[in-house]
Length: 318
Image (cartoon, rainbow, N blue to C red; front, side):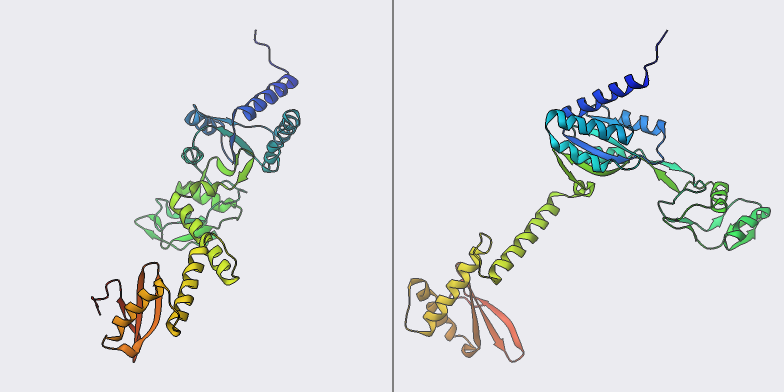
């Protein structure tokens, strides 16, 4: 005869299992489990089997165990999990790739009917078309102000109708109509709310970032740092090349305006000597120096139009 474990023994076993998982895994997904059935949860466990473990339980028990384990081990990073345990949530311990685990969990969403009193997670729109209902069922449509007509002995919806808005509670008439139409508008599953990794907590949206997104954000940050450093004349590694180039342009400008010269300025003067012999010598107004190349802008009557590259003094292309 199998002896059932007492409530105290179950709590001890649960505490031991949670402590073991905290020690074994450094990556945890905190997932909301609203309206998730036992069969659905079992399928999720089966799909994640191998490198992940799904643990459900009462929030008070999980908080107590985490707090005691943090005090026992001295690892206060576990305490970052406690504020995340709000509502109907579970913990997914994993050693795999977090993004792949999140995508795997999202596969196990199942459709669900609209039940009375349920808060709609999305907008529900009834499409136009033949409903297959007999004309005696028009009372449902009239109560909900849905335009209909009788076509070949059945009720037909004329235009699409927004039946329920996101955040509104489902009424009895809406639930009855959707049931008659065979529409299951909602889908439920584990929804990852937060990610815990080696003591750090961040949004699951971070997992959707690609390498290109990270490079773009990094480049944007470097640009902002460079602009700020140049504006306040504060030297940084990002702003240093621009500062050197600007200083070089200023020194060359002084050399061109005076008789003072130096080897790098001599080369610029040679390029300018070639430019003086061009068709519009008086229109050369701005000189930019980028590393070893020189670009001279020519101003015509209508403003800047042509750019001539002085990489080769003997070659001018307009």
